[in-house]
Each structure stands twice: as structure tokens, then as C-alpha cells.
Length: 288
Image 1 (tube, rainbow, N blue to C red):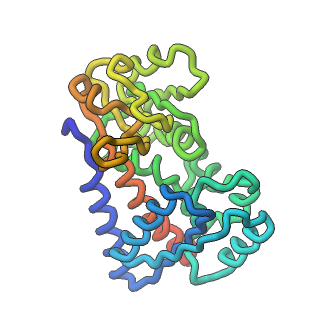
Image 2: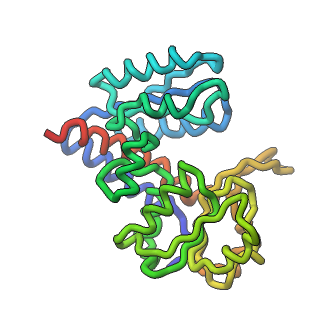
């Protein structure tokens, strides 16, 4: 196994597979993204999605909504997209303004168009090991594990972070009776006492806490495999800013068996897996 676990080749393979499927079956795919306000990080991510979609044959339309939009109007827009047969997938870009009820909004999205896999029906399918959408970031972690043939069977995997987007679904996926599962999983979070005690037990450490350079070399044991899910923007003297993960990559590199870089690691695969969910949505909607 390589020391540096790049996600670029994995993402490239996923994009090629999606494009081939679209061309062979002569299908049209459309993803609509709802972007509320003008968050720079969200705009950057959406623009990157649009570029990737254009290259592989997925139409991506971004609807930019005023940050002051009220709940009722947003729900009406989602309802219209649910009923539009030309729209295969709906994505609600986060973060949302505080005045909106996120739970009600997620419930409104048609589960068969919910490519983020946040709807309770999709989350339930994941927990019960039923077929359905997988959230893009946890799915990206599984793709990396599969590609690099990382052994998870019987291994102790420690996840730092308990979010609904990454930590919780990923823990369930790693517990599955599968080639990327059968692990013993510990989930740590902001209230975990003596965090280093737990991270030092990890055969595989997955950092998803959303704090730049949080995991230091003294928090891991020798030859740990680290999968860094975090993407954080920090100040840089030369460039103005740069992106780093939740792991102090430079400090940990010599001590670990393998580690994912940021950028160029899980985030790269995540974008590909989201677009793969658009193709999956089409197949669900046209399964007969």
C-alpha cells in the first residue's frame, strides 16, 4: 500500500464509469442545486460540481436564492422540483440560514431525488443495510478503502466526529458485513474524555471533526492508517489562504503507515460520489 493515499485516480475512474454509462444508454441526467446566500466556500464547491458535470454529461443547474428566503417559499420551490420529471436529483447546499427549519426542508425533498441522502428514509435504509443512496463523503471513504485494499475486517477504526453527514453514517457502513466493513468502530466527539487515549487505539483513524490540523502525531500510534475527511481554509503568508485537513499531515507523515492528503484525498472522491448518486437516482426513477 502506498504511503500517500491520493484520491485523484479513484475519482477519475468513477467519472469515467459515469460517463460511459450515460453514453452507452443515451440518457439525460439533471441535478438542481439550491444555493441560499453567497457563502464563498459553498459557491466554490458548486462551481466545481458544475465543471465536473459538464465534462461527463450531467446537466447541473444552480438556483441561487436570497438569504432572507422564508420557509414556505423554499418548500414550494422544492415541491416544484419534486414534481419535475426532467429533474433527477435535488441538492440543498449547506450551510442554511438560521431562520430555516432544516429538518422540515430535508423531509420535503423526494427521497428518490435526495442525492445527499439526508432524508430519514435514506438514512434508515443505510442503517438497516438496504439498497439506497449513500452520503457522498462516507461513500468516498469506502471507495478509498476498496481501491487501496485496506483491511477493515476485525480492525479497530476510530472516527473523530459524530455528524449526521459523516460520522454517524460512516460508523454504520463500517459495521456492515462487507468487504469494507466488519470493523470494531469507536466514535469520538467534542465531549469525549481523554480523546488521545482512544485515537491511540486506532488501527485506522478517520478524522472528521472540522478543526484544522487537530490530530497531532502524539495522538496516534505507530503505523496507523489515517483517512482525513476534513477540509479547512487557513491563512497562508504567501498565498493568503490554503486548505488543510483535520490532521497535521506533516507532523504525522513519518509515523503513519498511510495517510490521505488534503487537498487531493477524500474531498476529490466525494465530488465524484455525489455525481454517481445522480446516476443512481435516474436508475431508481426508471427501474421499470
